Image (cartoon, rainbow, N blue to C red; front, side, top):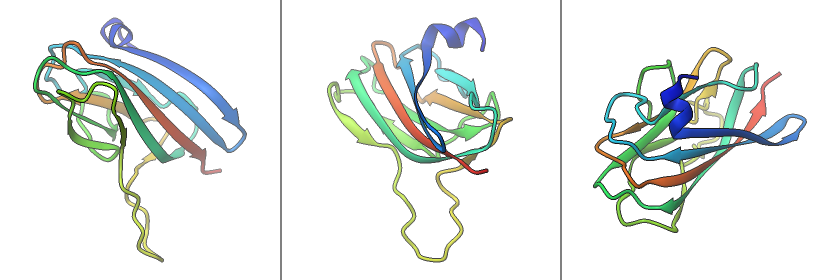
Length: 144
């Protein structure tokens, strides 16, 4: 993880229940609008996992009118398979479901993405997110 990412994210594996694990990521706003400008985390589990559930708790809202996207992709890219352009201005204290599960029977799951060992969780702001303090909670399950 680069020094810039370490400044914007605090990573913690909070709970390990065998096959299912919980990952929390602290997100601190920044002026960056670059792809993965708010952070990029290589899969910390060392194996392929599928994201079962995602919840975002916005402790303090962004002072800028910024939308944030979160997803699984390469290190320097933006992705939206976990959260797609959520406006984080004026939402301090709110909790958000990060994605809608596909409820179609007998359909291959295409979202949320499988987080392979070589891919990254990336967080991208569409404008300045200065002032933002949020906690992303991801429940993941091992595929093997």
